[in-house]
Image (cartoon, rainbow, N blue to C red; front, top):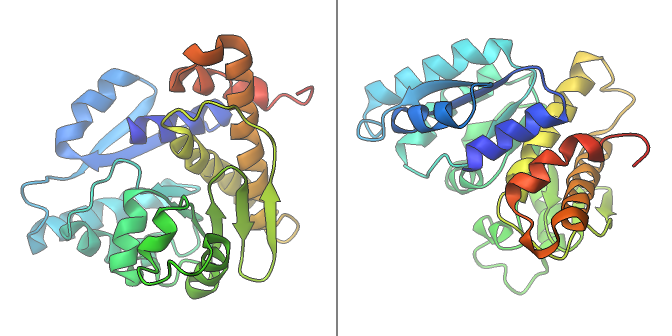
Length: 258
C-alpha cells in the first residue's frame, strides 16, 4: 500500500509520470492497482543479501534515476540490510543533483547507515514523532523538535516532523504547519506527504526556482496540501473516510479557491 499511495499522491498532485522501483515480488500486485504507475523490479528479497544482487539494484537505480526530477525512498521498502548496499552504491551519485525525500523504512535504513545520502544536495527527511528516535535511541529526555533540528544539521537536510502540527526545520529556521486537517488519522497520509513533497521539489528544480523558493517553503506547501485534502475528505465522508478518499481530494485541495 505505501508505495502505491506515495506514487498516486504524486500523480494526483500533478506529476506526469510516477515510477515505482520495488521488490520483484511486489511488482505484479502494484501493477494491478493502477495502469498509471510505471512499476519496475529492482531486487529479489531472497537474493538481496548477496553482493551481486546489491550491485544489480544499484545499477537499476543509477540507470533509471537519470530521468527522475525527484526521488522518494522508503515507503513499503522493507529494511533488509542488503538494501543498504544497493542504496549506498547508487543514491549519492544518481541523485547528487536530484531532490531526495526519505520516509518510513528509508529512515530506518538511513539510521543504520548515514552513507546512503552522502553528497545529496537536496535532502528531506519525514519522520513522525516515534521515528525521530531511530536516530537518537538515547535521546528520550530531549524533545522531538530539538532532535529534529539536530537531525537537520547532522544530515544537512530539511526535516519534516509529522504530528498534530507538522514541524519543518533546516536546523537554523523552524516553522510549523498548523492547518487543522481532519480528526481521523487514517493510514497512508505520510505516504501522501512524501510523494507530494517529491513532486513540488521536482517542479522547483525543473523551473529553476531553487534560489527563490526554499525547501522549507516547499515542505510547508506540501503539508498544507495534504492536510487540506484530509479536511475535505472528512467533510465529505465523515468517520467513514478512508485513505482513498483523501487521495481523491488531492486535486480539489490544490485548487486556488480552496
